[in-house]
Image (cartoon, rainbow, N blue to C red; front, side, top):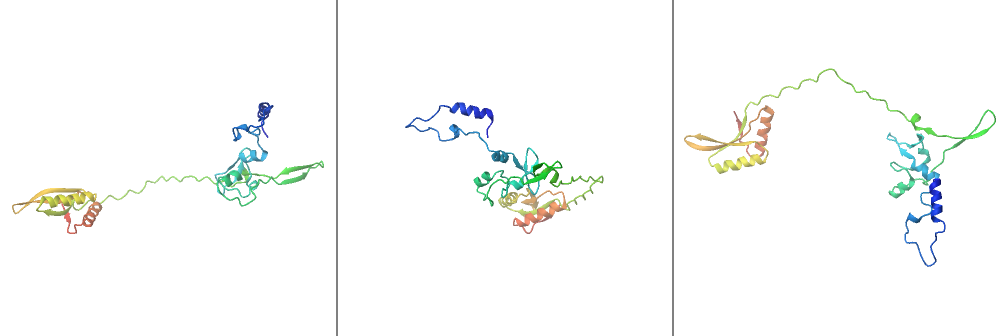
Length: 225
């Protein structure tokens, strides 16, 4: 099966063309195939089928909207032909042949006999999913409880007499993702370097900061205003 104009052009283009004795065709692909663009009714039918997006999926004829799953026993989604399925390495459990529609013989009132194909219309037979309407509440969401303010603003890590030890501790805490700070303090006339972590705004942040400091290796840390 081929369109009339295609058939006529193929006949005219191949009339009188032949390969002389002692020669052979240069191309072995389908560019010189005289049957190129020819189709079969079965092949055309396979090109016009598609799978539905519903579950379970059904194979339908895109032009008529009728279900044709029964015509392709063993065909699996997403393939629309047995050739595609085999090429993909998926085994076809059946013979891999399209089955024609069953024929029913009907006798009309005037005595005439006619045959009718029994097909199913997927648009009428398929169960329709009920539309789910969104439920809109007119009530406001319950306000979240305000976070409890922190009882202390800082976590005191330690007081160091040697600035180098204080810098090492602050760097270690900063590498752990904590907001470490250094400061100067004097006790009995001697200068010291303090290391703190903070400030924290809520009690939960303060407690999390204390846990992180102790995990970093400073179990004697304490809260500070």
